Length: 252
Image 1: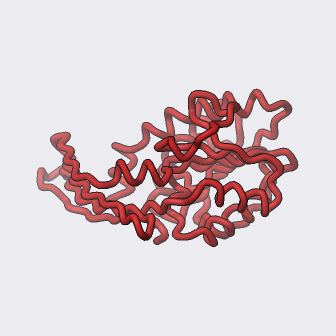
Image 2: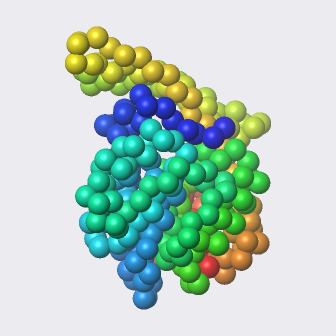
C-alpha cells in the first residue's frame, strides 16, 4: 500500500494539491515557536513536492525532506533549489516506515494524511520508532490523520474537476470492515501540442483507532501525546474521534 507516486501524478500534485501544506505550515511553526528553546533542524516526513519544507526554509530553518516517491522529490528539489544550494535543505528517498538520518531534529512533521497511507498498525509503529530516534530530547512529532469518521463520511463519493488544461475524476469508496478508503484517480493533463495525456493512480487511506495510535506512541517512549485541531494545537480535544481530521501532537 506504499504510495510511491509516479511522474504524472507528481506533476499534477505540484499544480493542484499543495494548498494544505501551505496553509498548515505557519500554524505548525507558530506552535513550535511557543514551546521554548528550539532546535533549528526540521524533518518533513513524506514531504511531497516540498511546499511545507519551503515555508520553514524561508523562516530560517534547516529542513530534511523524506519521501518514497522520486518523482515527488524531484519537484521538491526544484521548488527548494536555492536552499539546497545554500546547504540548508536536502531531500532523501526513503520509506517512512523505516528510515535513519544522521542529524537530530527538534521537530518532525508529516501532513496531508501521510500517516493514513501506512498500511497497518505495525507499519505505523515502525515509523514512530524511526521518528523517536531522530528527535532531540523534548522534540515534537506532529502529524494529521483522517479519522475513521472522516473516512466513513468523506470517502464514498464521485467527484469531477475540469480546469481546462487539467481534468480529474475521483472515485472513492470506504470499506467499513477493513477500515480502508480507496480512491481511484483518473486524470488528463494537456501538453504543449494540445493533446491530453492520461494518468491513473490509486490512493489508500487506512483508518486507525486513535487510542491505539496514542498507546503505540507512548510505548515507543514519547512522554506526552494528545489530539488537537488546527484551531489550537496546544489544546487537547476531548473527543477526537468525533473530528473528521485530527492532529496528533507527541513530545519526546
